[in-house]
Image 1 (tube, one colour):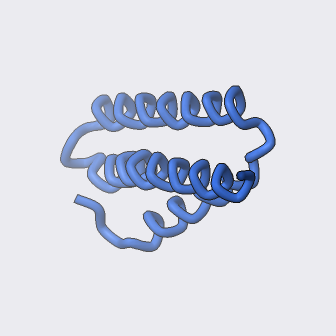
Image 2: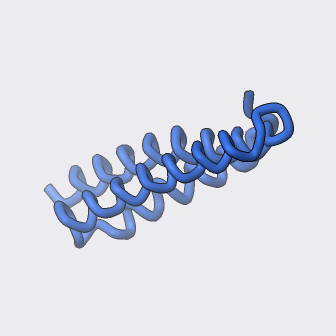
Length: 86
């Protein structure tokens, strides 16, 4: 059962990380077009969403930290090297 929970936590962290990091990095890439105010707003919202995801993981399955960090780390590296995000 621990293996199933590990993969579920990792997959959900990966999905959350893909959307969150794509929004953060995409807003940083488009700061001249969108303006600094909207960029800071987007970054703050997604940092809060990622923090809520971490808190939910910490509250529900505190022993699955490695799965969460692995999922978010893979998504961060994938988004970082994906190139220009529109």
